Length: 431
Image 1: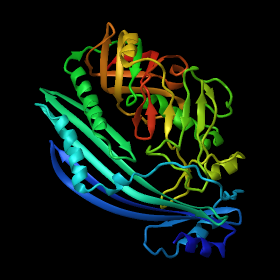
Image 2 (image 1 turned 90 degrees about the horizontal axis):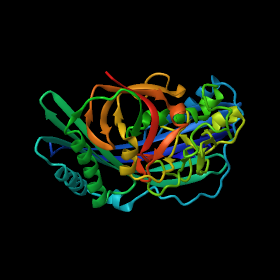
Image 3 (image 1 turned 60 degrees about the vertical axis):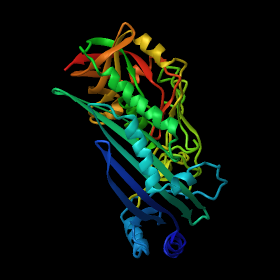
Image 4 (image 1 turned 45 degrees about the vertical axis):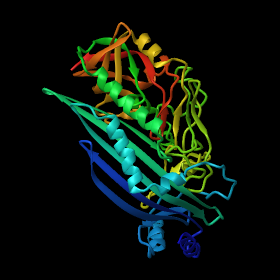
């Protein structure tokens, strides 16, 4: 299909590229500890981009035999702004594992047994357990008129659980998940259940919210408000538009020297891994922050062309719409402290595991103020109970310039790999 589209486009445009993605997904839902539903879906989508008169046009189709895609892409180019864009030439590809034969071959019975194993581990009196198991298998094909031609298979397995405990008028909800190309082994399932059970145990007692500028330990799940601004600020498009606080600061120290953040598409079996991006640019490990110093930004081909810099191999494209720069796997380098050592360093403060409203407002500016959805009081270096009706606030850029501690255990949250991070001087107040 792609070859035919590129051949047709080549007769009427200077250059063209395309992606073809297929996916077959099976989803199992367990509610209140029992299998409630099983669903299956299958998708295919092709996205074509043409360069005509230095203008870019894009069109897509989910049809098995698409028609009119070339004409639609050319019509799109006719009304686009000019850009001097050069498609990549073929280049050697690194070996990156994105596919698991065992995951692809897993039956509904296998997936059901996986979900039931987690349900059984989380079964306790007074706990309502909901579990979702999802397995997808598909392929990605990328090609362009300069000779790039690459195809790779992809599998993705996610296992998510949420426990709800009701006590009087208090409702506690604690969840966690696993996502990778592989089926999770029993130790992974056990670790997932243990993580949820530990946090439910911490919440057995209520604790009054503290007040003031305090040390706060953010778990990997709770650190979204800290790193979402950096993720937005390291987008080449934001730098090009002049809205990134980090733009023009390559080589400048902006964070604590213990902070190093890299985008790594080569992690074996990770959700965002790939050898080549959706525009045919070969992927590579890209440091964004190295020892606190701004080291790089991510660009797709068009944004890179407009900025006058090389593309970084970060383009993602859906069936419809233009390619956009997107991260592969973001990995924050760990520190050297155990969890117990981090909690001891808090002494009197807060552990934040989940915040409400992350992503709202002027995120790229770094300022945040969010109520806690799940947080725990630390007193005397020990967890003493769950804190409700509290909020945390601060500026991510300022707080990350003075890190008090990083955990040595990295936790994968989808395509994010983060250790726990301890920050001083976070504003905490009752609500």
